[in-house]
Amino acid sequence: MRNFKLSWRVHPWTFTQEESWESFLKLIDKYDDVADAVDLYISDDIFPNLSPLDDKRKQMESFKKHSKQLKQRGCSVGMIVWPTFNLYAVERAYFPNMRRMVGINGAVIENIACPVSDEFLDYMRQKYTILANGKPDFIWVDDDCRFTHLGGQYPCFCDECVKNFENGIFK
Image 1: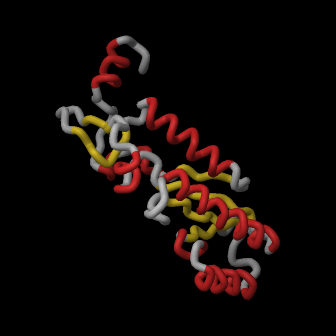
Image 2: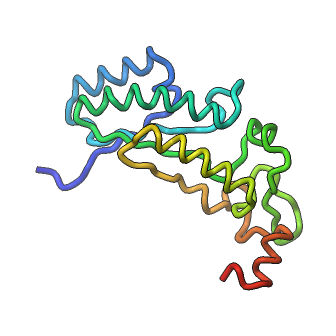
């Protein structure tokens, strides 16, 4: 009896393209102990012709179908959400007025949303509601919350965040 779980991270192109998915299922079927859990990446810009939220809805159609297939094989199925704060080109186009993160030097970091802007929080609520409707066993929020590898710094220094620090809202 093992005291650990085997978990596979599966890229969106594997589960959104049927040929790749069938290949993955054959592997799971051949080696039935190869995975206890399967984490399907839910990424941005998989369907760049769609709005960011419609992209998630389309991914959830695929997630539900493939999650059922994996659960029938005894796997727990969750999702890894990437990115959280990074705004890819599609998000920047759909949310041009979403407040961006500002570094301590005053430079605007175009590809990172201010983590407490109303627009960003509303988008996150909608996004995670769509994802939760996929009924995953778990949701893993990936580590882009640290910002530094995205070109950001701690904390955001936009006017609103600085005002909140000055007023003691952020402690």
